[in-house]
Amino acid sequence: MAPGELVRVDGTELRLRFLEVTGDSRCPVDAFCIQGGDALVHVQAIDGTTARYELHTGDSSRATVTHGSYRIELAELQPYPFSSRPVQSGDYRATFVVSRP
Image (cartoon, rainbow, N blue to C red; front, side, top):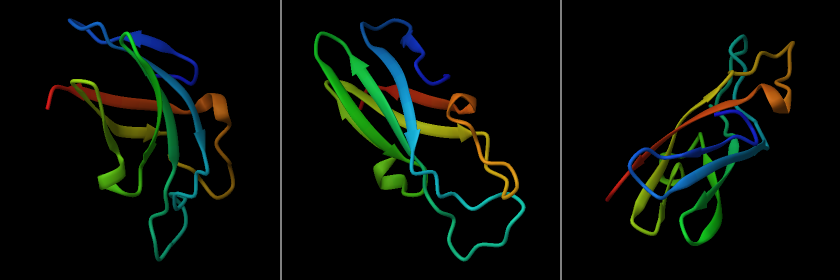
């Protein structure tokens, strides 16, 4: 999903909107880092109720939330940064996996 994109999850009432990425401190592909870093991905879930969540790339325990009867997981965030080329906010693409716990 691209920032601002709203999609309906097939076979459900749930809609997800990828809002934005903030605080992308992931280690650039062309650098050597002691820690992998983290990016904060904001997503909105809508299914009769609306809630906003912050999911993390660098901490698997904070990459998943439960919204009602749905489990929403941040599976991937692209592109990965390069030290010489910062990622522009509109270039991000997030992949989410939605399941029922």
